[in-house]
Figure 1: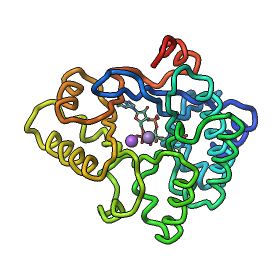
Figure 2 (figure 1 turned 180 degrees about the vertical axis):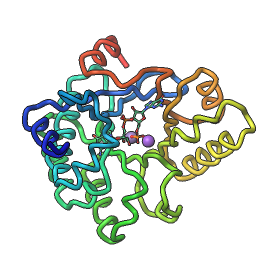
Figure 3 (figure 1 turned 120 degrees about the vertical axis):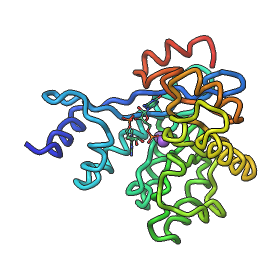
Figure 4 (figure 1 turned 45 degrees about the vertical axis):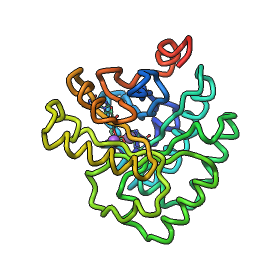
Length: 251
Ligand code: G
Ligand code: G
Ligand code: MN
Ligand code: NA
């Protein structure tokens, strides 16, 4: 049986799950939001990474119902969290290229009763490989809704910096590969992170350093003035119930 068929069944039977990883303000140390990360526990094969099944979903045209489910579920969960936690949802380039995306987001927000500025869409540089006028139209439509936009995995794609001239991002997410080696001030990775932070600040964008695993990395990242931090050093992605437990009493 093809994985594609199993994925179709899992979606229909409500067997997909969302986990949430806290995003922390580097200065205040408060949780300001979470990133929704999709999980599939296959009945025979065990957990399968979205890095593997998202491309399958895209080829099988399952990315539409799957992506819509993720948006609806993330908005519903976020509307019930204490405080004003933001929820970040990953949107693939194929989803971004679909003209129906703004309609789906509007519907997910209003059904959940979630204010638009509490939803952040994480997009990678790969969206800029598509037709540029369509891409520009989508950015305009999404900004008009009032949702926030984050540029995910920054610095790892094939795009030029030209798109930063016009794309209305609120945040740049600094890829884990830069964080990994960043334990020594003066290292190449530290220099790259410092340059990304300077660029983001000049363009009035926030920054999140992803994949922080050690206190040494956290310490250096703080010194580099990254505005937000995310990684196992704080928390792995957790189930919704566990997140509510962690954040009770205010975020
Ligand atoms: O959480 P994890 O490391 O397993 O995620 C692997 C990859 O899958 C990452 O690139 C992440 O952005 C992507 N991913 C996780 N959840 C979703 C989702 O809901 N939609 C899309 N399009 N990608 C996701
Ligand atoms: O592509 P994107 O940045 O959306 O994917 C984030 C991925 O990184 C997720 O699969 C998530 O599970 C994973 N992740 C989050 N924090 C850490 C971390 O501290 N270390 C590692 N190795 N992976 C992490
Ligand atoms: Mn992401
Ligand atoms: Na990323």
